[in-house]
Amino acid sequence: MIPRLLLRSFIACGRRPLCARNPIIQPSHGRGTQPWRSQQRLFVSKTEADAKIEELQELYATAKDEFEIASEETERKTLFAADDRAAAQEELQKLKAAFEEAVEHSEPGVGAEIQARVGQRIRELDRAVEAMEEKALED
Image (cartoon, rainbow, N blue to C red):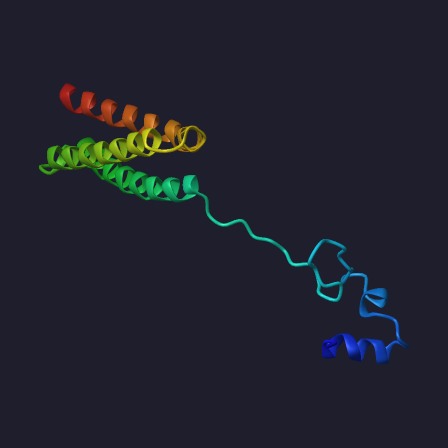
């Protein structure tokens, strides 16, 4: 059975197939393909590394928000500064634990990709929290 679109194109353009007059639709000559169908674009699904990195980015955003709040409170020397620093430290520990778990319990290639894409930001945040703690101890 000939599809209606192909049949109409044969009739409309004097028995030339649709792909002969439309350069966008080209026949594919692969095994099991149908020459009248347009080539389909393939999309890559989210990889295991992308899913874990997305989870780590959410934890990082939370830890960074807590750090910024604690940093502001520490600079102003408010009553809540110590509690905010503790909350920032707690969120950082959650992030570091999730990061270590993601790197260690993944395939070697996935672990390396996670470490390359997220590791530096976590180390920077860790150093910033340590500097904030030192500043609080000085005051």
